[in-house]
Image (cartoon, rainbow, N blue to C red; front, side):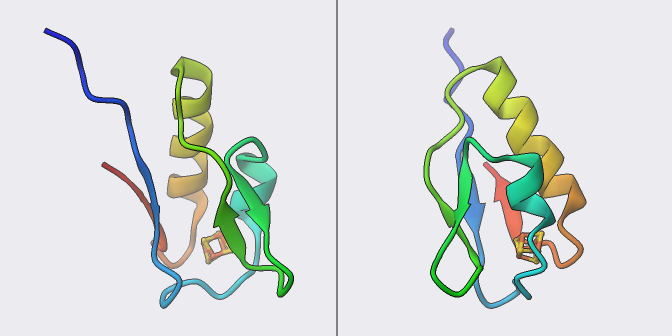
Length: 67
Ligand code: SF4
């Protein structure tokens, strides 16, 4: 049985743009012109899933999640 790939989700209403997520997951998140994160790629391997998990855990406003 194959597992579905993890999907990184972003809730812009919760985000205050501090930006620690983009430091912890630079391969998945990049800043928009206002400094808020944009999802630039989805996790596709173990390393990028780990990166996404770090960003999700570090977000102080729970604006990021993995499904
Ligand atoms: S860490 Fe959370 S609140 Fe801060 S910029 Fe990233 S998503 Fe937004």
